Length: 234
Ligand code: SF4
Image 1 (tube, rainbow, N blue to C red):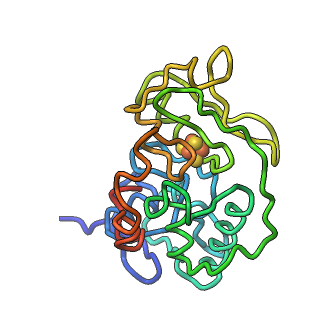
Image 2 (spheres, helix red, strand yellow; image 1 turned 180 degrees about the horizontal axis):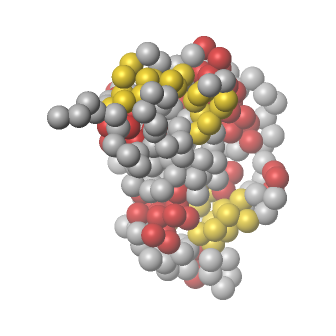
């Protein structure tokens, strides 16, 4: 029998099958690489850069990087962890992420990554952006100022729900999530609270109404354990 194909991740041999990415192989081996816009159920887009690793001195997004035999990958270096923390801090100040009174606290990937990476403060000056809140729908609502533009809802609505409710539009700091309906409002779209697009949002941007505090703060997944212990969620 031939030896399994492997690459090295922070000194650990990681087996992989041809076609797997570094992220997929690492996750299958139980090794966590911090990430935000990636989800195991969807093809990667490599936009958030949080999962960047170093190979032969070059930074590459591990969610899009095909695994190769003999490849030497660095992930948990102080430099890369510091870069990830800066990215998370930038996302915090580019949006309105006020964890103590957010319904997603304890179940938010952005907050959980902040804890995982040892973020003590936001470092940068807060921008407090003004983005429209869409509370027009009877069952769901959207707070664009909490959106991290991961496009997971866009992919989920298109690929799983078959509805194409969302898109990303605009440029620079004006980039935001758009709702594909005649009025641009959720109430005139096909969205439903049970859609995969709703449950996949990693932060408190897309939320079902009347369910925000059914699970008390302190009893939520990332209140109980570090995000690295929850590979099934991400
Ligand atoms: Fe991602 Fe949520 Fe924003 Fe959609 S609403 S792009 S899932 S953060």
